[in-house]
Length: 258
Image 1: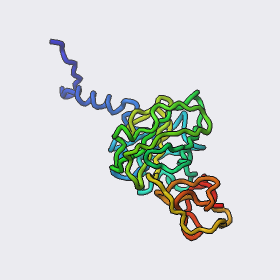
Image 2 (image 1 turned 135 degrees about the vertical axis):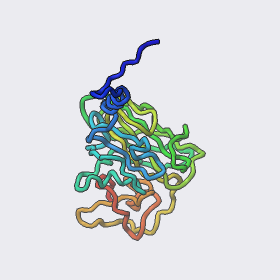
Image 3 (image 1 turned 90 degrees about the vertical axis):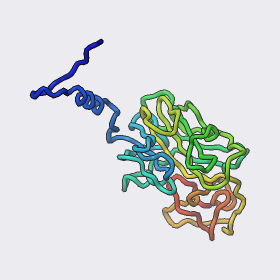
Image 4 (image 1 turned 30 degrees about the horizontal axis):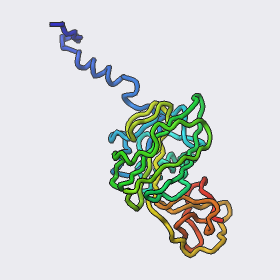
C-alpha cells in the first residue's frame, strides 16, 4: 500500500486535511476576483454566484461600448439590475438589441455589438426562455451556439420555435474568447447580458399621434417586457406599444420616438 504523507504540527496533530483545504481555497479562480461581470435576470433564473450564475472575469471581448464590474449577480424583475449598478456609472447593458418582434414560427433579427481588444474573434452564446418556465435548459432555448464575431456591429437572424409560448420572457447573452456551452458558471473572460423580451405577435399600435415630441435631452424606448423600437415605425414607439403619445423611458441607446 502506498504510504500517505501527513504533515504534523508542534503537538503531533495531522495537518494533511487542513493543508489540502488550504490548497483548494488558494486555487486561482476558486473565489472570483473583484473585476467580474454578472447577470441580472430575476429568480428563478440562476443569477447569483451561489446558484452557479454566470460570471466573467473582465477582459477581452464585451458587448457594446463598455462593461462594468459587480460583486455578485444583480437579479431584477425586469433584468435591469446591472443597468443601474454600480450607481453613477454608465449603463453597460448596451450591446444587444432585438430589431424585430419575437413571433413563434418566424425569423427574428438581433443586433450584436462586440467591443474589446486583444483577440481576433469573440464567441457568442445566447438563450431565450421560450417555454416561460424560468429556465434556459431546454434545447430549443439555445439561439446561438459558438457564434464567432469580430469587433463591430453585426445583425444575425434566428428562428423563434413554433412551440414558443407568448408573454414576457428573458434572454441571456454571453461573450468570451472561448465560448460558454451553458448559461451558468464561469467563463474565461468577457461579459454576460440578460434582457427582458416579449414573445408573440404585437399588433396594437395604441392611440399615439403620428408625431411625438420628446422632452429636451431625453430619449424614450419600449416599456419593460415589450419589443424594442423599430426605426421608421409610423408611431415612432416601436411595434405594439404606445400610450398617449409617449413611450416608457428606457436606455440612451434606444431609438427616439419620432
